[in-house]
Image (tube, rainbow, N blue to C red; front, side, top):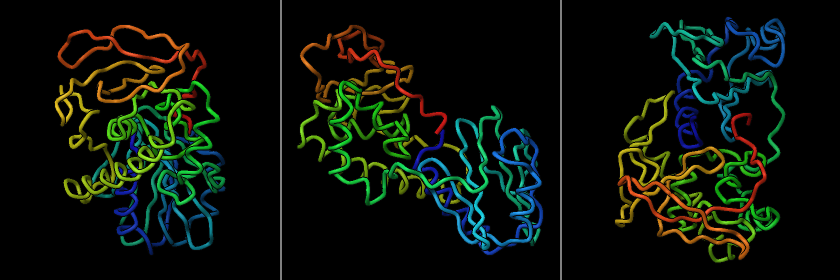
Length: 294
């Protein structure tokens, strides 16, 4: 699933290519993915010119001159494809602009969501000014025994962070992904906040360097911890893997685990070397909301 840095780059490139162009035809190939009828979308958008492309969390908002907006959440396998350079399969919809240019949205899993005039997001974006240390401290301490990784991936709390970048952020902050939110001291929360911003911005920079024109895909080869081919962190520690709420989690013993005294330790974290080592998890039995619907 594309995360905040990927979508930052997509947004920038789509803006350069399509802003100012008039939408001549709006074609829906999978009506079930719309929140309204194709006819309403056509009436609202055809003949209007694209004013801007904005990112909100893991969604891109295409804003037209008449203030109508199309929101796109690519979910796991959705992709933007430029027309007419490619003839895509698994089409969800296509936007045909003047000058022979077009933009298709494809999805082999048909999970992509298209929303006409989506509601304004309630949770702050990870790069918003509203996502400050005070907000982070307050919301962390309200989430008793929730693993901090699950907290940071909850799009109702903070928008834009997914499974790959959260592992990178927590490693940089030296906080275990299994730490209980309400047990993390303020000094560590301040480091966490700093690294959230830093890791996400660096991710965008790295993608722009290696794939400056990209509008689809997930670039992860620069990652230090969440990387299938790496066995050690940059500082030499074994990279461990464990499932947390069904998500593959990469971390090292360099990270501090903040938990309540009653929380048990559990066995068997799989190291990248294939060996076994002891690790710590949470006693929390609560089912954490999967971030796919957001």
